[in-house]
Amino acid sequence: MTRFWTGDYYNEGNGGRDSIFDKLKEECGVFGVFGNSEASNLAYYGLHALQHRGEESCGICTSDNGTFHYHRGMGLVKEVFDRDNLTGLVGNQGIGHVRYSTSGSSQLANAQPLVFKYRGGDLAVATNGNLVNEPGIRKELEEKGSIFQTTSDTEVIAHLIARSPKDLVEAVKDAFSTVIGGFAFLIMTQDKLLAACDPHGLRPLVMGRLGESYIFASESCALETIGAVYERDVQPGELLVLDKDGLHEDRFAPMERRAVCAMEYIYFARPDSDIYGVNLHTSRKRMGQTLAQEAFVDADIVTGVPDSSISAAIGYAEQTGIPYELGLIKNKYTGRTFIQPSQELREKGVKMKLSAVRKVVEGKRVVMIDDSIVRGTTSLRIVNMLRDAGALEVHVRITSPPFMNPCYYGIDTPNPADLIASSKTVEEIRQAINADSLYFLSERGLIDSVGGHDNEYNRGLCLACFNNDYPTPVEFKDAKLTSCGCD
Image 1 (cartoon, rainbow, N blue to C red):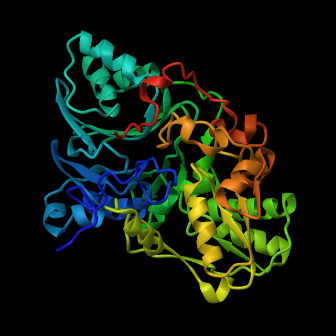
Image 2 (image 1 turned 135 degrees about the vertical axis):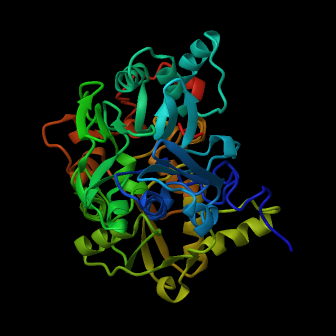
């Protein structure tokens, strides 16, 4: 049998420079259950709902009367778990994780949850995000005798907890106070589950209830999937502790400037999710409407690049009165893009992943809505695809400002030199992607479209990838430029 991918499994290492599409890679997804005998099954369905946040590896760890059971593997949730290994994951509490794809880090050792034994017993850790000062902390811990088993910066937290003479909760507080970055953590012991977000709230984490049990997830869509009721978002700097006595609300740090990742609203999160009370589909529609107000162009149809840009395309169409059409169709069964052995097959792979509907776009002036332009290669391919299908004009509208700075908080961004907006003007980018016109949503248009928190800086958004205004110190950034804490 001929196979077109080069690794041991389909999704291995597909997030690098050789990917057919150069879209930004999702961070990761975490899911937790406390107080439910079906913890592993709930985690399985919850991770399914979060699969878009990571397709390279996944895992679940449960605790049954003080005994840990866990299973991790490379690949999709449905590939890694089956009835047999789920049956073995007994217990009334558990945490799960899906990990995104990134070139060169396809290691089972880094699949989460990470599980450790220390003087206090067993410890399982799952996170979404990145710790920008991890290299320095790791070096200091190694000089003091710590032996690391993975290359994941998540392991740093486990070592900080294990070395602390304090009780677990205080040790966790100290550990989180030591690290800098964007993160949402779930930590589990034999009888406790802890949940926390960084002081800026860069990475989302929600809490829900299913009967008497507590549920945590990176996105609210996972709560809906298992029938849980949304309670609230975990607040920046907050530490929630669940044990036999119930929920204990605590803090490891005061909330600093709230700075929720803008790309969650633009691209990463599912449209049926809510972040801090803002529905993603609704906010993306507003982005499209605002784009129409800022950059109207006379055209025959509006189409969105599936899937993340569909909502914005609908909003643009509604605002302008130009009909919305399915001019581009995504094949949902190709998985992540595989590495092709030749340029000829590579180009065929593009059409396997995305196709233009000739009868819709032929002879038409097309407005193509997309969420971002990273290197520009994807936009060029899609514009040319529409032209090859007979489009007379292709006008590109982007629902984010120009992406010109790397993210240090968990998004797999390329080297700054590879970000097309870091070195080219909008006109130069337009020429590079072969579009008739190009417009990026303004920062103010983005902020107003999301809504967010009225009295806070940037209404509570992090826009560092657009304007270089990072909410945390990034003097450590060069040590770990394009990595996620899940690596």
